[in-house]
Length: 368
Figure 1 (spheres, rainbow, N blue to C red):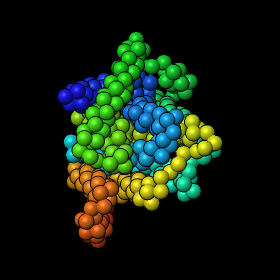
Figure 2 (spheres, helix red, strand yellow; figure 1 turned 180 degrees about the horizontal axis):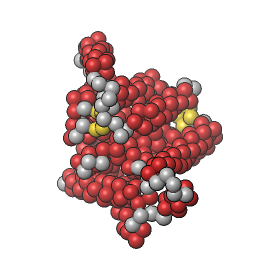
Figure 3 (tube, rainbow, N blue to C red; figure 1 turned 90 degrees about the vertical axis):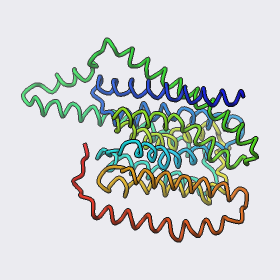
Figure 4 (tube, one colour; figure 1 turned 180 degrees about the vertical axis):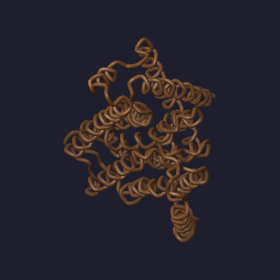
């Protein structure tokens, strides 16, 4: 009964926290002249990745370094396939041109970098420092880029006015009197998301353990999905409220931050011993994460939106991935047949469908 109450309380905290976070973040973006996309890629994405950061850091300090990597890999697969999938089912997500041109390639690059660094079965102290340095540089770049675009737009609209007037305007947020309220909404929302996800994970792990599910499956599915519940709640709330830039930016930004920020910090905390990359993860799940990141490009390019049917494809693949993990963990007799159907029929059919849609759909579809 206690676990049931924890599960319900976690869901309530997630919904309330997501509502406050999206409201505060969208107003903060308007106040500072920063685009909602960048807020989704930075404040919202980094905030909703707090559970992954906490669990990965705690795992390293507790001596379970392999869990730190597994949590990030599982969360990234969940972020793209489940979070974007369910958000697109609620409302087709128009994809910002910047996401296609810049953010998805950065996520792909970060995923490939992690794969290369993991080939020796360990993330060293240097690897951690490199990843952490990259996330700092990425964040600074995004903010500077957004403010420059806002300033250029202002100068273009008032061509004869001195540029320094716009610099001054950008440094003074509009609605400054309400700035503390907006920041309070973000902080309270993040707090509720972190607490809610912790309650949800605790209850879900207890349920799974009672049902006899193995630790490996729990780590790659329930813990990874549970720590990504803030992303789920935030992206769904953003999609419902029409803040679709935040919905997409949150999922992509969180995935990038998971790799660069969470594993970067975890690598530093691990010290000279480094982070162990489990052989099973290196043989399969890590490459699924890379493939999922690569799959974003053709879907995003097909009309520059994630349509409802494409969201359905993402969700179906996540269900198939979880089914594979469960069958593999139990060495089930149905595993060979399941793998043959997926690789011989489902995957090729999806690729062919996406290619046809990419060719037929007009390239002038909406993008902002």
